[in-house]
Length: 239
Image (cartoon, rainbow, N blue to C red; front, side, top):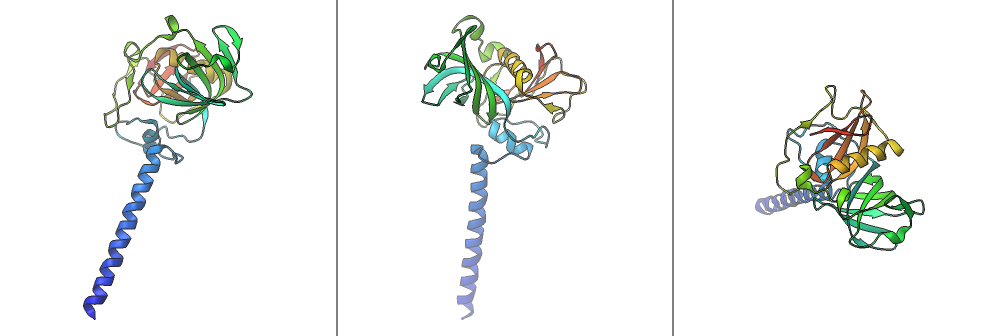
């Protein structure tokens, strides 16, 4: 009688432990696929494919914001296309009736987006998905041919520690998580400048700092995570 009750209690405890472990696994998998809205720095960095020494709760912002990416078109469908950046990041681009297209300096249409062409995409970024406001077809040589190695970009590799280094000028009063997120023309100019200097990642927000300069937040690569742009929209540093 006693042994029977003990067996039942042990079975219930084992089931509870299994359920708890399963729930933990589900949460971990969900966070890694980026389907949970990030509320902490650790969640944000997991979805962006980056690891920041020290972990911390800094620079954790959620919600779509102005940004963009650049790369080579890998597939095209009726209302979207995908690009592969020079650092190997896959980006989904959603098109809308309001999306504007350019080829060089001339206005164009959605038909300009074809597999194999290089594009700059500006719009609203959510993870590695961009709802495009502007798509610019870039030349295959010259200004559009910058590579991660020449720019110093470190492509993301799962399990690899993020590179910790600083180049150029970092604003003395810079603090992660501070500033105001900007949009429109200002965000577009800062995004373009950052991607020209450090291609390969996805810009998921642009923050105006207290000194009037901009911190451009870059995900999908192991370095750089922050790109600093001055009021003249020139890149001055990165870390």
